[in-house]
Image 1 (cartoon, rainbow, N blue to C red):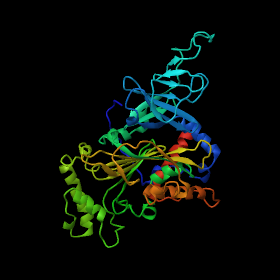
Image 2: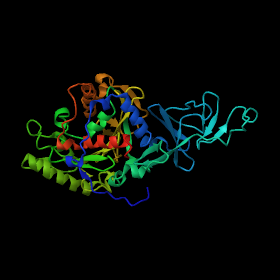
Image 3: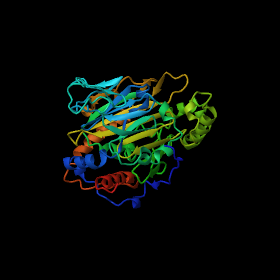
Image 4: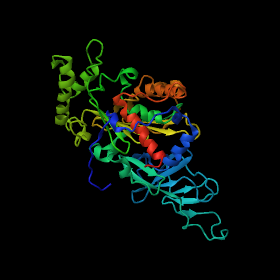
Length: 447
């Protein structure tokens, strides 16, 4: 990614005139035929996240990303680069490895063939005496995929002729150049099986209209009022809602107090008692917080603030990257949400939750926002769970993401109703229909 990073003007994500008006029909959430079209025309052509660069720091370190019925290895090379290969032995297709580990070579457990981390065959049994076509060692290579890095994530694409990662993500790299994303520590790492189609996750994170109903804990610390948040979208399907991290003036805590925002002000040496009204507390306090953070970041050890601008240092641009990755960019946290289709059942998906925190001097634990208090260290391994109406992840009960998963499973059931024909959307939900229209463009060959 060597081009100058520029951000083109966004389209207004609250303006339905930017839409064609494609219907969002229920069958796209459960039809096997539609799921097959997604595989043929979308998933095999876009860029996927294999994992984080922090997972493979040394040569020979690898991670495996299983997607639908495909499996891909991303492995660190001797020169520090990362390459990606299909996890399929060139002998008879055996899947060779899983999870994360470190190797000098990939050993096929079936017949013992060994492939170097550069993908070249190093050893085969009876290589000199039993291959009429000649010794395969040094000649055969694992099938390689395009691989690139952005944001501390390793990405790969199954499409040899598609857009580069930079082109695919435009304008995200330019938009978030001020965040040192590769320094964030993943403190919570979940993969949760849901009884819902993968698209519900993108739908859900493309609007905050549901927050007042579903997430009453949000308004005291993020202002998602209809006239406060800014909705933006770009032609390739990416979009975001930029939300001030200050108390909502529409949904005030009972009694008028706000312990959460008061605590944030005190942390930055601001007296919350100095404001005459709740409006001053929320609006002027938010402005005073920006000034204090710009003034005191180095002294207090918040070194990741160094390049952040006035908005980034206090606010939350909740960002959907087409088609299935959402990142909440918070001043001190990154939260990645990703949905991936189930390989057999379009009414199921896998929902990934990665809670990441920027290191702050002196901190040993952090508030991960979605998964509660966690030690400030890399989570040792992914926790695989089945949501099971919430019974599978009781430790997340009451968290925003838990509430979203409950909604997803109930919405999936509703898509089968003969009474549902199309969504009747508010203007602040414009990005939902835009997502489906871009998805239609991919499936119908216009992308």
